[in-house]
Length: 378
Ligand code: HEM
Ligand code: FES
Figure: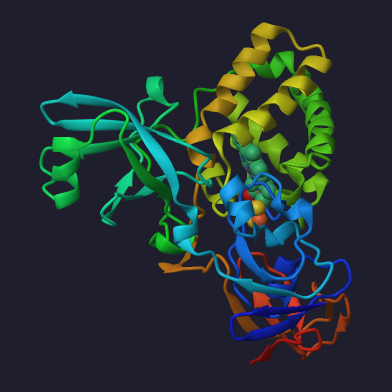
């Protein structure tokens, strides 16, 4: 099939997704899960059919505007695509409550339809066309609503107007800030806390000094690798590697002995957009496996408490780049390389001879030969 995207004319190979076709032909398109879960990759289809599977989970407004997820879209005909238009993401929101104190006012809104994920920064638009950008300021006990906090020090015209006249029942429009509107995220700085939770050596004994842990992890990763929401994150990593790494990581956490060699959870998952709900889903699979292996509830709780410690390092709504000698490694960038050992093209599968030039995706480590780059500039 042929894909028109900006100034590029591209082609897709059999069974290839739009995202794979873009990447193979050197377009640094944003993505994370590559499985239709996180919505990081959304694009607009200007012309052509959109396979239904690639729209699953998008809200009604986005469907009406022909948005889709290229990572799970195998085109059934030619397509013309465009980058997302941020203003397509506005939805009407009703002001439910104002919660006032001396320092400011928390406005609690209820959006009339689902906002596109991820929700971290809100762009608001009032009836006079004024825009402002606020961090989501929810209180955990009120998390049904979307909160915007206006401190008394905010003297912008929009803030002053809202303070004086925006009352419960009033409406504004809001949307999430899109990935391309946010500055490139940096590795988050976490509040000081010990690297790992206190070890729990008794749990190690209950896990039969690791024998039972390994059995549970083997079963867990069989399920993760078959799970529609999780499996795409694991493309390119073998199941054996995951069992091995997770085993030694957990052995270190549970016993306190230094046996794990590898990245810490914050760095390992740097490119993965993982919501709380997705982490809960993974945890449920883990819980099922642990229960099926007959571990008593008391120990299940103690195991889960250890895993929970890493939640703040793993849940995030934007990926952040790792650094090499102080320089960001682009999340979606390419380098041109000449390889000195034979290999196989990750795009078309053809053999690449030593000495050939390839395009290398710096985060994913995939390589593409010059033959399957059929991109043409219009
Ligand atoms: C939805 C949740 C999660 C997803 C989608 C996920 C995904 C992944 C993926 C794709 C890898 C392979 C990447 C690599 O090795 O470079 C990985 C590795 C790993 N994950 Fe997770 N993970 C999740 C939750 C967790 C949790 C809760 C923990 C710890 C409590 C954890 C600990 C690790 C460790 C230790 C590795 C091995 C790191 C290494 O190879 O250097 N993950 N994860
Ligand atoms: S939905 Fe496409 S990358 Fe996650």
